[in-house]
Image 1 (tube, rainbow, N blue to C red):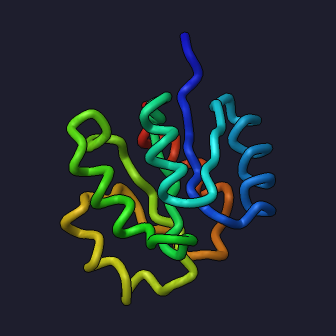
Image 2: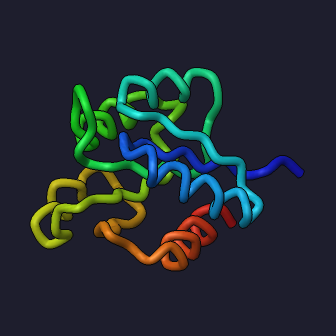
Length: 122
């Protein structure tokens, strides 16, 4: 059986290193993109099973990238977990129409994130 793929879209290199180690330890393949443009390029090559998406990204915001992704039938159903330093109560309504799976505020509990990934990749 192929490993499930988790794609992190975040410009924080330290976060990417930490998540790579933890997610690979859980048996997943880990990929990362530093911005939305890179994420869309990766999607053309490999389809992840879940996307971890930051809101504050260079060149464009996570919301715009998610909307762009949802327009493509091939990627529209990939579940997304929003990771953000912005408060959930201030941001969640913005994402309702984009059908996000979960919204997790930074800093977050890595165990909670891994459990949500497991829920989405069953």
